[in-house]
Length: 137
Length: 137
Image 1: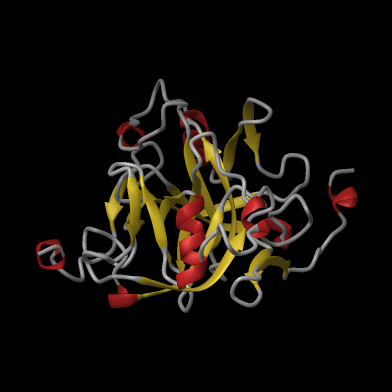
Image 2 (image 1 turned 120 degrees about the vertical axis):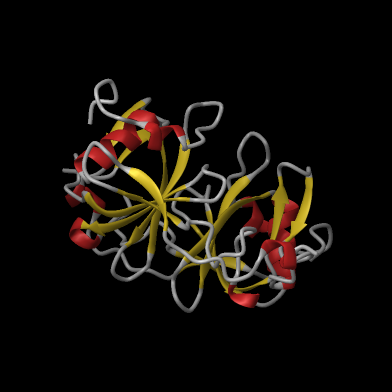
């Protein structure tokens, strides 16, 4: 979508922060698993809506991040949602390859807080499905 | 949990931002519905883990927000997860009353992007389950 030539009032309902960014949650559309959280700027959100594939803003690299451009693990967007304050995006996606995390796991949320009261710790609960060295070769 | 008297190394694995905050996603533990996103500081996260009820940091009010303290719509925490970068928390919760949003809806993500290409708009898809005036009376 070219924001210069098409209506974009829906983008004006989105509250980007002082850095021009909004957090975006990717959720597996079928299983409901929360896969990851990344950030979008206005261009990333517009391109996501126009192409049907998740595009984020990489804060570390300072450029658009077309999810899966290196790994092949693209996210086909089934639904885009906005929260009540307009400051968080929820994407329901089909995760190509079943792997969203750069560690080779389905989800980035692979650590769970476990343990007796007073002695909690983060336990890795989810398996590596593919060696990251093979993903980013 | 008093962070002064109990081990808290698990809290040291959490990457709070420059404002001392981390985004926290609340997801219904049974249905998988993403209910809301709020922010936590270290004290909010420690109290959440210690009490088993979601506690956030209200940026607008500048104080701890014990979710449900006014509405009764508390969130019983079934699971706490941390993402790969350590900078997002995922809470799997039992949402008391089935309403997480201040608008009286189950979820804050009650708007979906709809419409023909080039003419999208946010459509409200979810019903108000309880009049907010009755929730915050």
